[in-house]
Length: 147
Picture (cartoon, rainbow, N blue to C red):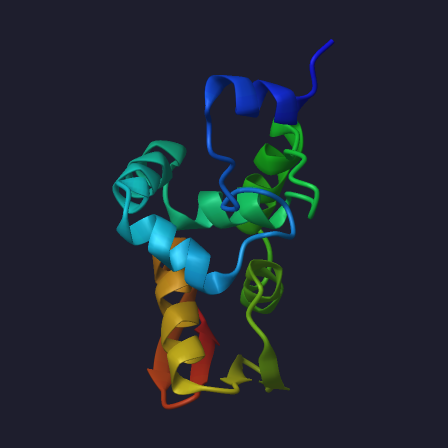
């Protein structure tokens, strides 16, 4: 049986560094994106999956070796996202929360940067947390009041 390298040499195929685990530098990845229609295809895949949140859940569930997440695990995570607290939801998406303050009928979340706060607020809006809480964003804070 021929090895992969023998097949590459025989077929005159050039081995690409992009896509190999642990071998791709950021500059090489950006060059690959610019020189191909990868971004366009990726946007299409994200739309087909159901949006950024679903794509993040799939990517978060992939191991460093590239093994894929099982379909049942992904569905459970999406269903749980609809019933979990905003704090847990944001942490599961990978946001780092600086501080959480709880009061009798309200609570607030502080982020390390305005950019993170803005992105987190948009994720909460996109995932219908506004149906359960009255939310407002001010600087690095998102404030919630129970409806």
